[in-house]
Amino acid sequence: MIGQDAIDHHHSAPASVKAGSVSRAMSWLMGEQAPTLPTDRALAQKLEEALPWLAKSLEIKRSFVYHGARTMNQRLDIDQFVTMSTGPYLPWPGQHADLQLPCDAVPESRVVHVHTLPGTGATSPACNHPHTHAGLPQMLPLLRTPTMEVFDRHRPIGVLVDDIGPWTDSTADLRFGLDRLREWLPPGSAIALIHSTTDLLPTARQAAVHDRRDRAASLLTEATGRPYSPRSRTEIAKLLAPWSLSNVDGPVATGKFFPDHAHAQLPEHHSGAYAAMALHPSHSDYAKDPNYTPGGPTRGTERSVPEQGTGEEQAGTS
Image (cartoon, rainbow, N blue to C red):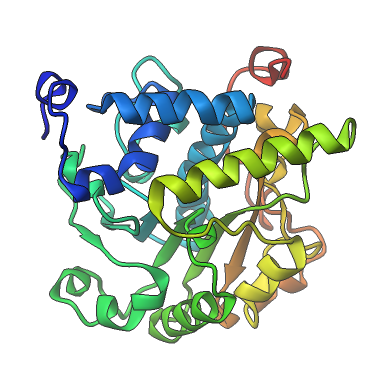
């Protein structure tokens, strides 16, 4: 791990460290225990000025990944997971359980963490599960690596895709990667995906809101050297086809996915992203069940996604 004092006084950080700035900036905003560069903290502050609800959006996404894993385990009997995120998940001291490491959601599960932005290996992982680096367009090489041999391919695997899509501006490349992933996944598997969007921006003061959006996108592009590409609800749904979605209405604002959670009470723009869970064709009965909802019970079960506080405690005012 890079020591914080060393980082603060290292004026010519290597390129790989600079490239991980976005991931470290987001960690700093969330209050994670991670060393950061002054430039990381400056980027985080500029992003939060552009999007005042950004920290809440990060919280909502982290919670979705945690509960997505629990839901796959409790309802689909999945205990093997691939997480795909821009950088490593780190502890978030003093926060609720569902804001901690997603691999804590299902104890004793097999997990491989895949990081998609370069430079994020500068921070040591917070768990003992394997970590590797690859983007969705590099899915074929990733799936052929020894790292992925940890999985039992005779049993279902859950994939948690944590908003990595916007960092690939080619929808065709994203689609190619997800197609290869679907081909590799065994029967009974599922893919839970978060993808940023501009569809959910506040409707009031449109010009000012769009200026904020453009400013944030510009900051992210400058920090990574690659375009930042949110997508529409329709585009996100197509990325997951032909697998059926657990929510027959299609992708929803991330905070609304689990309707019993306090995040469901927040304005949709706090999510800043859509979420969906795609089910392997072997789960077709779920897709046909009119009583099945993504955060609700399957037939013959009780609700198993715990609430996180009350709506008043979590909703905020931004």
